[in-house]
Length: 259
Image (cartoon, rainbow, N blue to C red; front, top):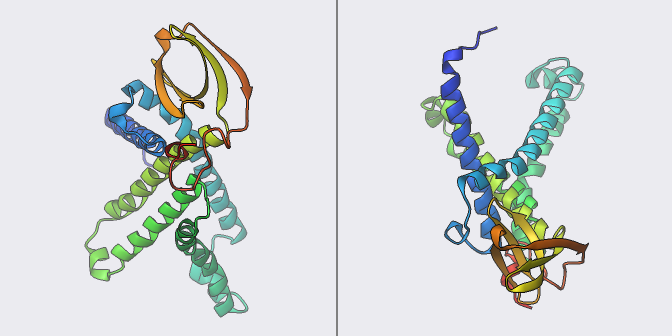
């Protein structure tokens, strides 16, 4: 086994930190874009973006773990045989080849089905859009490098990086949009906030270091409230959101639709 060079640790840590911050910013970009505003309107800090990683890293780690468990289990069941060995040693090679390729065609059908649902006015979650986006990128990537001359002149590191990094970025961005969608339609919590202007009932969407992002159901608008100006906030109850903040149309933010 190759020994790890400790001298490279600072470089690896800096690369990891840069990737972590970049993906966290992409996550917040997806979150804020779904709500209908950009970074220039959000009083966030670098520490807020870093804390966002605590939201998107766990599901990504769980997904990668499940993939590796499935891969190891498949290799054990297949006794370490290669793809061609499995096909050649089967009783019906033609059917075996088709059967092992069939999941690929099912995945390839997801992007056009998502587009058809959107054009038909069928509501689908932002998580589904994220899966469709990742598959679309994988298909496009395979087409970009489908010519043998291009593939032969491309380094293996660049090939793998150009395939995985954009897919990760799409996953994180749509995961942020899905979190915004869920905070509005599924898990918004009603709070009674007391500040200098009085007592107000709001839906708490997200907390930051110095601000609360809330939704005013009566005024039908979102607002960043500075935590230093809040004298008291009390959780009241969970309520049904549909009809209060609007009905999600799938791709567009429900906040944009006034009641």
